[in-house]
Length: 263
Image (cartoon, rainbow, N blue to C red; front, side, top):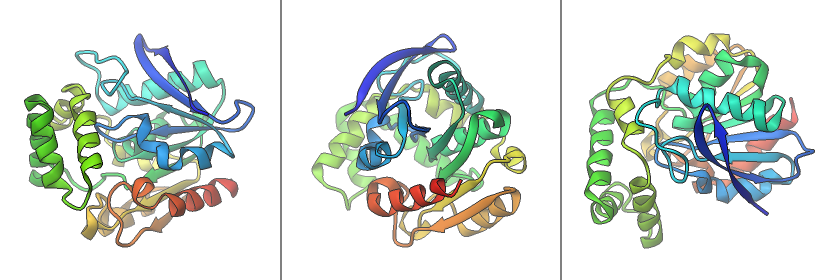
């Protein structure tokens, strides 16, 4: 059973979902850009059988507050750190997807005492170029255009999905503040994750989606990340798009639980 509530971290009201018994080891899930905690539903129950799972809506997303500023990686990571300190009261394993993976890097790199193990699901570590900028601009313009524009963009970006998925993606996009997109477009996502990778001392699992199927982590960046991380393991998911936990939930859970069980 999922329990939901609002908590205050760093002066921001953050919506938090919890599952599993609080006596178990804590597991913090950090979602991607224009997602919300429900994006973890395909894997939540399986993870909650082993962990006390905490899945917040990041600031600027869904039911959490939307401050006018504060969308750097450092701001998200500070929220996560405060949540662990004030709600959990101890260190946790952390799983981050996409934007959440970058937040996990900053959290583990700057507050190592709070992170026991780290899972980075298809982290967007490749150089930020014009295709990424164009994608972000398209998302921001569609979001500002309302539900119909967001729905049309979802159909264009993911023609392989169904009607329910297009409507879900459009609704979640429209339910996100401008700040997370603007921070990326304006280069305010600091600190640089690459500079922090060598300082991450906890065991780290990097999950790589297939770049040919929409994955964000290319082979060169994956190899570079593994070389930079002191205690890293790589797991590849061929023919799988960016959101591994949604496209292959069973394999995702098996891989993550096996890794965490070894720590």
